[in-house]
Length: 163
Image (tube, rainbow, N blue to C red; front, side, top):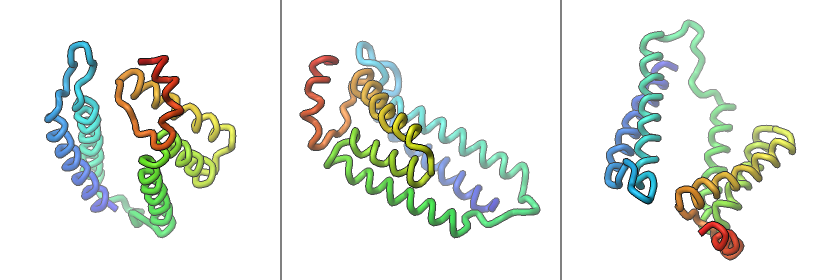
């Protein structure tokens, strides 16, 4: 288990550094009258990921291998990771067709209700609240338009209100 933790932590650190380097192609600071530069969020999110991975590596090295170490992935965990990975790939594939505001709620319904076994109330609240938050955060606040697929005409009235 220790070896797998260390390998994943080092891999995430390398990936974080790669993302940070490529994010600096765009401005990472505040752009006058526009807000954060195009590279700001990728850079700072990668920096947080780098710190988190470094913390995992440091803790893993400091504590050593526990006496009751179990395999890193048992068969049930492998199945769960594979099913979520497949669902994410399907979601990503749906985004150009149906748009982010349909694909994300579909994923959330599957993940929360069917995979996670949560109740319909929580599933409904998060399935409705997440796309609303994403719309206001990205499209209204940051003015970053997300793909809408064939649902784009439904957003024209909202564009008229907010832009």
